[in-house]
Image 1 (tube, rainbow, N blue to C red):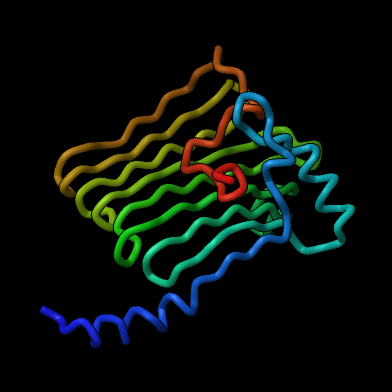
Image 2: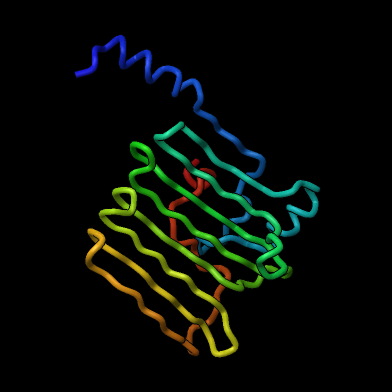
Length: 177
């Protein structure tokens, strides 16, 4: 057992590092269905003149909430990337993440969502959706206890690629307010 003064002296510096960063309130761009109005995010990003829009909070090694909207990098199609991450527990024991790539008009190109528990050793799952000329291609991967699970690949010509679908992972810090 750790003596109380020692525990306090170890945790107090971590609490001093807790950070709330907010450059944009993503609740302004929420659609009634829970998704994001990516056309509005694109307009807000261009009007701001910044490299990206972001919102989040951080408590070192215990909790992270982050939402970010930035232009795509060189190795992705032209457009924008909306990323949300939520992780908590000791050294991020559990968490969720979501990444959506949209074109210059805000139409969905691809999305990926995942979650983990027990640092991914006890359970992890990932779904990757890509809009193709043949419809939506969904690639799923999941494992439990590193032994059970598998991969799946499906094409769904009847599945519309909806941009207003709610993001799969955790709520953004702005939505929690």
